[in-house]
Structures are given as C-alpha cells and as structure tokens.
Image (cartoon, rainbow, N blue to C red; front, side):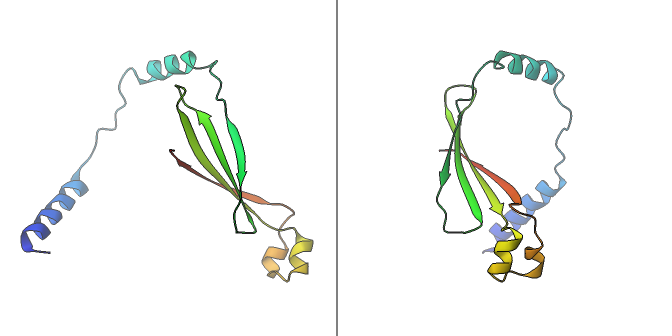
Length: 115
C-alpha cells in the first residue's frame, strides 16, 4: 500500500475512533412506536416453520418465514443445539461432563437473514 493510501486510512480510522454520536432519542419516539404498535396490533404474522436437514447430529435447524409490517416475507434461521441424554452419552462413550447433561437440553441460537 502506498504512503498516500496508508495515511488516508489512518486518518479515517482516527476520525472514526473520535466520533461520538448523539444518544438522545427524538422527543416523539415513544408516541411514534405506541402508534405503530397500535396500528399493527391485529395484523397476523402468517408465520410458517419448516425443519431443515443438517449433517450435524446434535443440531436442529428450522427455516421460519413471517410477514413484516407489509406483506413482504422475512426469513429467519433458528438453530438448536440438542445435547444427548445421559444414557445415550454413556452408550456412545461421551465425555463425563456431557454424560452428566440432563435429557434433551437445548441451547437455541438465532440467526436472521433476508431472502
């Protein structure tokens, strides 16, 4: 990288590090959201959930599709880590710590994306 570009990037980084945004909410923010929530309170999500195949034995993945404020669909991925029950663990020689896990414990991780 030449000296000009290096200095330009360094300068920009310094500017960004010093940037302090305004943290004050607009005065009408609460009334805006109260009105918006009232307006869409009766709108159904029209959601659907479909289990997706995965090669990982202790992961469940679901594709969830729902309507936003308009009829435009949004897609979310929901992944759950499903720990095996104690008996399954002992039978398959899992680690002692995993073998002590309670039956069907789940840890859910959410990831969203647009389609």
